[in-house]
Length: 346
Image (cartoon, rainbow, N blue to C red):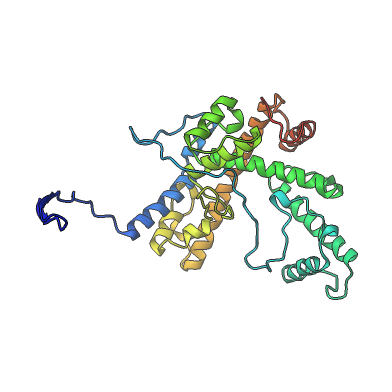
């Protein structure tokens, strides 16, 4: 202890010595440890995420208290392309039902100008009228949305004939199921919010200091966001953005941080089945190969998680979960059409 003078009264007061502090680990060590942990979690033969099918939630350290957070409800995630003009609209998420015919002529021209940079289009953008541009844009948007449905194996050959609003509803349902699958893939929770009783759902939200106002669907989405933040987040595209303080990363984001030696070490892990002769000599080739392997493995797991989430949703509505994936998907889609807007199981 040392003594310091109180200027107000000239008295001496005791000052406690500061407790010793632990030296923080070097940032480089933390960074390398994090990168290694992310890759190990999602590429190991027996990942903890597999417990999502029936395991229990990890409790963490004994005696650890839940960290209190304040939330303002469901976050708004705005989709945008950083390489495109700000006026370019994207038919994704809540805007999936965008109809090109109802867009401004200049907005359609911007969309087609951007598209011509990405693919060949047989249209004179500068001279085309509103009707002809709208037809082309709607065709492109429909094609892209069907491609997304095909990636998850829930598309039909007749989808291209569907009205844009109907196609959008299927896409939004697919994204909702993928969102639930991501919760399972996080490896922390075995029970999805839509499987919880209303009381349990509200209790989980209150425990995290998240508002409980709104219909059941809204509450489920809020809790899903919170669970995603608490779990490990790793995505093929890395486009999840910021929401509830979380940010997903792509395989490329992680791989670019590895040294040449670490890249070689990752490529020689037993479950990839590569020999030393198969490891490329150049850095770019090693990065490309490891990214390809990780993305393929991750996509397989996303597909399994999607199936689990789809079956969970079917069960929550009392629907059969037998048959091929796209038939189960349409069974759920058709059932949801019969429910009032925002209605969920009680």
